[in-house]
Length: 415
Image 1 (tube, rainbow, N blue to C red):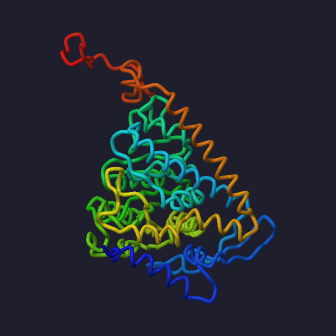
Image 2 (cartoon, one colour):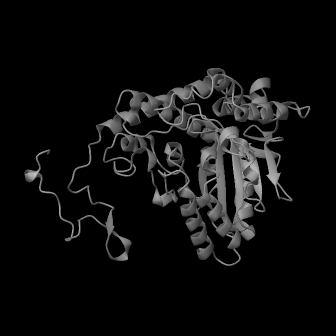
Image 3 (cartoon, rainbow, N blue to C red):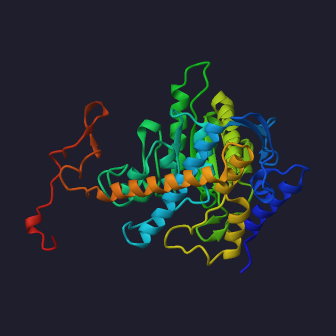
């Protein structure tokens, strides 16, 4: 089986950007050449070259081609991304052992996208995403323990064992899921953008809203309708396509007549970002947030990324793409390997320090999974009606209303 045209385009683009200038550029070039192009500012700060990481549509300006990053910042990005990777590998193992049931969509390979977006956002910005949401939940204030407990269906889960893999929320961090229906998060994200516009203080930048969705959802009618309203009303809305090149098991050249997703807004500006380079994602999303938050209107963002697992745990991921394609992406564009090499080349850490960090994170993830497993299952009382109905003032009402008749289990033959 040959690699799909979509994946080949991604790999060709990476190779082209690597040879388009005399200096190595992009995540692929950094891995190939063993050196991220950078300029040291001090022992704890460096400036990194991002040339070739962005393409724009209907914009007179674009993200900067350099980013300044401190040792502390880059190490924190690496630690979050490595925690995401270990958490998703753990989910894979726990699903195969049947400790996790139902739907489960893993994010490994795409860690730079969620990490870079979160690094450029404020907590007050609104974020909603698809059902591939474990790592976004972690970035937006979650913990491995709360996420795994939710996947195990336990009460200490982030949504009290009621949501499962596709429904994570964190109101304190303005993270609203986790949407189980393909593309349905986008109109909801538009509502957050409307609220942010409505509540904005005159003369001050607006908080933005982002709705992340995959290339497989990009041609849905509800997204076109949302884009129309966002443009009509000049809302601070970011339409973010995480283009991992396969809509379930269908390559994008077979499911979309338009493969430049960042141009899909027609007159709405757009930017394409190297989604395997956390530095590029951070700088790109800083630019997008400033543009959209200034009142200039919505923007389309296309993240060029890749998922290592299949669409879900029921998909082996190798019937519509070959193993060589996956291995090539891992060896040339892996977002974690890029950060590790960048840390070493900047003098921020050596290989032994990185290994110790990985060891510490693996141990911590294992400990949190153990705690998650120790949590109990929800019970009918009091858990069944918690956070379902609300009383005056919007406060949760943990008792079911009198008009709700509970089942009589003594009369049930199947109980």
